[in-house]
Image 1 (cartoon, rainbow, N blue to C red):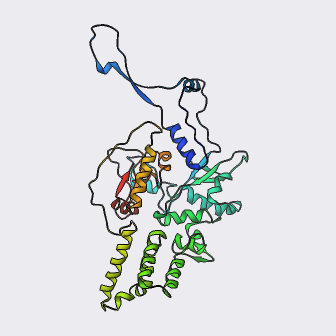
Image 2 (spheres, rainbow, N blue to C red):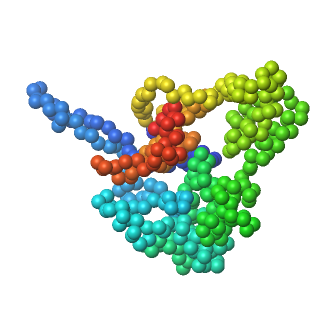
Image 3 (spheres, helix red, strand yellow):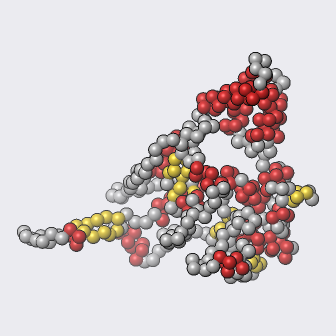
Amino acid sequence: MFNCHINVEICSSIKAVKYLFKYIYKGHDRVSVSVTDKVDEVEIDEIKQYKDARWVTPPKALWRIYGFELSKMHPPVLQLQLHLPNMHMVSYHGMEKIKNVINRDGTERSMLTAYFEANNLYEKARGILYRDFPEYYTWQRRGKSWQERKRAAVFQVGRIVSAHPAEGERYYLRVLLNHVTGATSYEDLRTVDGQVMPTFREAAEKRGLIEADNTLDDCMTEAELFRMPSSLRRLFTTILVFCEPSDVRNLWNNHLEAMSEDYSRNCKCKHTVEQMVLKNIRDMLHSMGKDIESVDRQRGGILFVDGPGGTGKTFLYMALLATVRGQGKIAVATATSGVAASIMPGGRTAHSRFKIPLKIDNGAICSFTKQSGTAKLLQSITNNLG
């Protein structure tokens, strides 16, 4: 009836919206056309014959001619910075000396540290979460400060930059900022009931914002009363695979004796008994699709996947990620844009994951150290899908 292709997306979840916006901003379809004269003898110049162009349908052309908006986002969203102490991004010219950059006025300030200062200056600000701050205060880029919003009619939404649990302290800092108001410094954010906790993770645990590993330790302690050592080892393996304990070493030390009772009867050497328990746990991990040994021995390769919109490229990526990760291997999903990365599980932009500078020149390098979490992740990668 319409003589055209119609794609209907039911926006029942945020994922459908992400998928739809990817198509809006991906650009136009392109086509190569050949232009020739209708004559018997003509000198063929393939370079001049072909033209690279884009084509649009009449409705889209009409829409653009009249200058109608293709999309609109309301209310405006402000991206709120998230960083650990003295680890914020600083922009500078390529030829500028690092010493001058460090000594430049305002270098030590960021959106997050300015939020702490605002809580110290304005009494009204102390009851507002960091993510809700843009609704009541405006960010001044020039002075790097928050000022009280003068026009209540203007509405803006704040969104804290995302952080994965694998990032450790940065993730727990985000958890605290999403639940704690009135913090005037990083130390104040780690303070619970007058006690300054050494890490953001411990502060989040103390506030009950995340589940501590005490429940896992209690589970093993209770199981020791009536379960055989083999069952305890399987329970320990299940905890490793599905519960993601943060302190595996402490859990291992607390329950090694109970898990090794059957081996201890026939062998008096503690080191040998410990190795026997580890071997048994390794075999069970392998049977669950997990392996504690490195499996990065395969040859790498580059595959290029291309196809028109709607042919299933995203489905293919998600199937590959699920298969590789289901085998206990590490697969990193990256994309050039944040919209494309957001529709893949665990997806990140290539600039964010590999710390690639936004401006690439002859002296550009990735900004992470050999001892950083990013370096350790890259060393353990099985597949990189991007």
